[in-house]
Image (cartoon, rainbow, N blue to C red; front, side, top):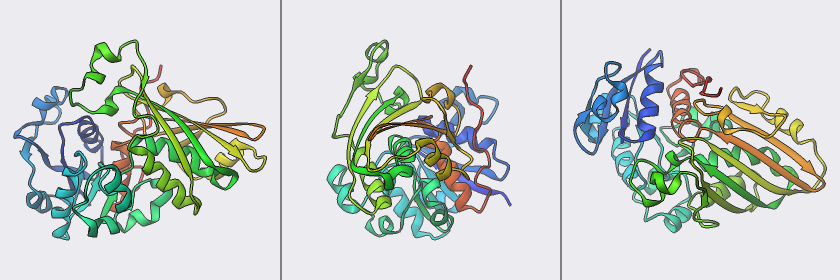
Length: 334
């Protein structure tokens, strides 16, 4: 049975990726697109001219609920929760939120973002890391789609939590699309081209998300030091995590056992490459031990596994479809 889905905040990079994925989905139909002003989707994204021509409305929660079985919210934090709160009032429409509004505990959210305006739904939101919460997602009405840095970091580190000490150090590299379409001096071509730099070292907003989830899974406090870097790529993300071990292990055996049933986790025998995952829903992971030191290396497409294709996987599960439907497996590597 075909389900009708909508996207609010469709004018950004993740909005376009969602459209492309849904157009290839056998059982989903786009019934509603919304942004901050009225337009045609092919005017926002000329690449869709002659492929998909659809009106873009000014966002209205009630209309979205009437037209959709599920709505993707591709909005900034704070704005997203205002729409989720209204949509969920009608009890007819499920929500996958790609912002940070429902990913964190109330304490962490208000410490690192702003006051939360939807505490009731926050209590019931399911964190949408599919490999971790698949069963909970099945019955969820609201899923908080993880951030790109947390997705790559958590998938790399979680398999080793029982073997490692409590301090985790993460160095991560991201393509410029992770900054969104908004104009910023730091993401101008002349700033990014032939350049690399860290930003918000040890204070980045994704640090509490990574810390919170690692601590929940480990059932003990995990201390995370996280430093993100901007590199001159359009898309893609590479994470290098460094931890100390409590015991000797075979890292690749641990990964293979932990992810043996996961279709979109690929355990690599050598360090991973961004180019191998761009355009796909895969997360590639590698790990190597040297004495008590363990290095864990992961790569994802920040716009797909770190945002839109992960959101689609969540939607598939929430709507009762095969989780793998329309998830991309072939990227742009040469």
